[in-house]
Length: 296
Length: 300
Image (cartoon, rainbow over all chains, first blue to last red; front, side, top):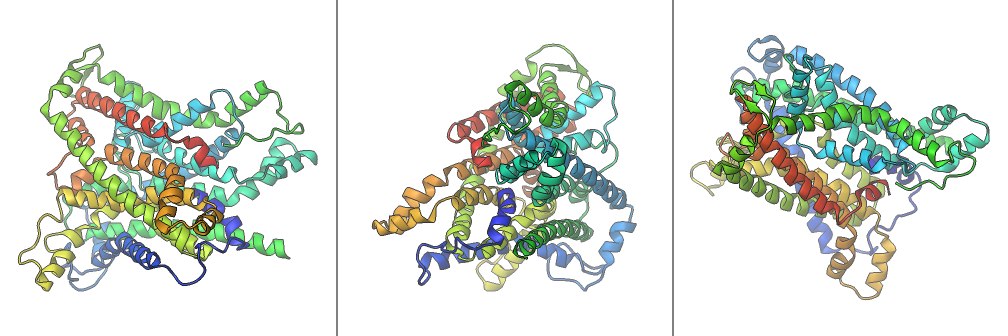
């Protein structure tokens, strides 16, 4: 999705490449077949999620399956007031804070790494494969290693130290890969023009690159926030005594059998949707502004 | 990554300065990856050679006991077979669905803005919680779930199917549900780069649609398929929570057994099994990487 987000500038403005299908006439039968497949895929993708959002609005008699038993906000109240469902409020708080810290670090570090990887340098392949390794390594194993490392060093594992690092080992590879796609579409001429006009390196980054790459940086931030906010496997052994939200959900799946589990799912997904919507909206807004200022 | 045409006006033109600048830019990345990726892997590697007192205490030393234990256990083979079964099934389904969804978006949706919109529609769930998406199958697949209710109402079955939830089937459904996006994105990217003129030329030359698929689209999507395969295989092989929750404890995989080992503080055995799994993963990934230069692919 990274490349597509980066692609938006070219694709949104002029529709020069209109002829996607080879024939311009009637649709071939494969179109209807594949459209059906696509429709079924989207239904399977969203259907189950919407089931639990609906079921979370049942009243006190509610169970885990359909049919709906009444409707109320009972399970949302239950979620934030009952002790047996654990410390939802605290973990919610921690997860948001952690996700914000991870987002800021991911954007800055990915941007710098993106600049660095533009030119070949001695040892760049080592760094690149270290990153790929960090991406594909089993999260639980990495988490255990980090936990044991902190133990061996006599440090306490906590959500803002060990879990922060463990999550960065997951968000940074995604961030840098998105930067790769974004950077490959950056026209070097602009940067050189800035140098020719006497800009320093810092000025060319601040006044030329960051504004031009802004939509890509928003995409990196989106990855940073959502991947951290939902991260589970790497945090399990590294979060210490205080849970993050996904860890709270995990313990609920093991011992809570009431719709408050669904209510938590609804709440956390609303947060995700708000973040996704805000990010995509920002990207579209930047593109629109550019489109209109280019025309005018 | 295209090496830039290094103009003379650019401040760093000497190779030594370029090296220094490159390393300066990636140093923050390295400063995170060394303590939180390289070091933990080395710690796990070291722990696999340590002895344990059985209560979570580790005795530094060098013993192959844990490896002997892991390799001699009949359970290990069973776990690997189960993991490979899940991996292959998930790979086949995500590949088929992912390939045709990407094909539909690239070659059949004529409005490009609409294609991007539909593509984003597919990617939105990727940015939401995996655990929530997994448990959202409960109201559908459960014994009293929607699918059973519907089948009972239609008279297809007379008692609820129990294999739908808490079974291997449920595990595969949850994997395919979560991971198809990892196939769609890279395949979509490589398909979008296929020049449409090539296909028109093939049609003019008398190629059938099947020929176009076989001789143009599939070969030119290979790099996307390879990338997607790396993601899907490494995620399924490294997963434990889908197996644990969706099988209802009935099935296990290599990492879910690792999780149980950690739970009872059997660190060396867990570490040895993790090292073996990592070796298997590295072997599979490097085999796939031999067919495609991902660094070239990602940056193109």
